[in-house]
Image: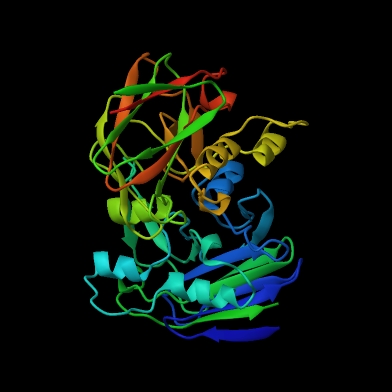
Length: 194
Length: 194
């Protein structure tokens, strides 16, 4: 087992062979991250929330759920989930999002650039990076469709979620800088490659 | 005003100038379609459900809602909506989806290929085409996140939804072949370019 720290507001990526597992751990508690998987044999075949909703029939993914690719191939399966609350609706935070929603006037670290940067080392183009799987992100969905970002349910430090690779993959994970998703602060995450 | 028919199971695309409108009409009633808009100045900057959820804060889009691009630019605004029920969660139906969900053994007309084909004429690459705005598609969302495809709410023939271009766009519209979204049959749609 190899344990890798994702410092606050940054991202990393790895090649993960079919059958191997990756566990994302909220070591400090209350921190969210963005996870994006791409099929190693096709850098354009990244994960797709729409395809995942097609085949899973639910917005709420947890143990047993499979993340599908744009080409409808299984990428990752959630094998174990000590938190149980994630989001697959919101786009990764981006420079433009910080300008629009936080009135940012200068460059801000953001999950989109961190995902794109980490995956570029494996030849994955930016066009592949769409909506990430927002690990530990807690979004309320009202009966009228209204969305609310809530504090992460991973408040107990050290809890994590384990994903198994259904094929050879490149997987990027970020530690999200957006304060409103993380109870007002940004912390590290740990990824265990099992 | 120019009125264009989208025959059943097909798709078309147009250049739509900033400020112009496009009305999708369910002329026969009970038919859904996929709409995909791309900024004319950047063929990689297509619509994004995640960005639209970021800024709109709801899964239910109707009059007044804005469809945003991957780069967080407003593409289309819903100016008038006689139906009120659409979906922005499910990926466009595709050849692989018909193989997985309908056990198709040969080629099937599908919205993904129809969107890609129609937009290719404007230089838009397939990698830009992600989740379409599924006009008139009626999806139930249970409190636990479970999704159910229901019969379209556009049962009254002749009702439509009007979109205004917030910038110069390429816009593709399909008439969806998937029988379970359209009450068991596939019909034409009409697009009025206003």
